Length: 310
Image (cartoon, rainbow, N blue to C red):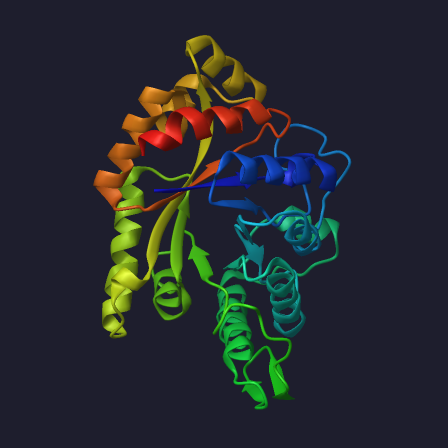
């Protein structure tokens, strides 16, 4: 079971905050450091000092870490044009020595689009654009050096692109697709994904979505086992019930709800819970959503008391 740390810096974090967490993630032995790609806080809190850009952040972390994988859950297709996005991600992959994983989603949070002058199209158009972006970005990366890439779609047109730079990973960084859409999401995952991630859902819902991805892959003649299964869950783990309660309170979550819908409890309780997830859904990777970025002891405790039991 790969354990990865996932952060939500739009809730209030500087680059230096993220660097501390990323370096603690690496020192503790976790597999990867991931961050959301959002420009506006959600829910309570002031979000100060304001958003940090996901790919600028990851470019910095690429030079200040050595081992951990780096990526987004997930970059919004509405934020950037696919050509420049392919360049940015390929560059960060080069800067990291081939440690980038590329999560891409259709985009959904209306308020951040309004706040920063971004267009959020209706759902069908959004998914049409998303599908074109996946084809363009992976096509640019996989075009052999010395050849050109062209694409003519409803929303994007590329003509004789040199398809440079190339990422360090060949033929491309792993692509992560996720979400609960019942038709187009599984179809796109079957076509493009190396990993399918479902965040913050119950085990039955998660298993049903994994099975849709499996069916879509089989319909395309692809081996479903090529698509790694992962989930994202919020964590509040402690040495005793008091520490668990303190950590849940620090992130504004009801402990009973978090025990039901996330990973909350002592190390033994959480290990049992992860085992249930594994048995029910077949996951081999778990993203731990850590919301209190000042609590580095939380990461160290998970690494020392939970990870070895997995």
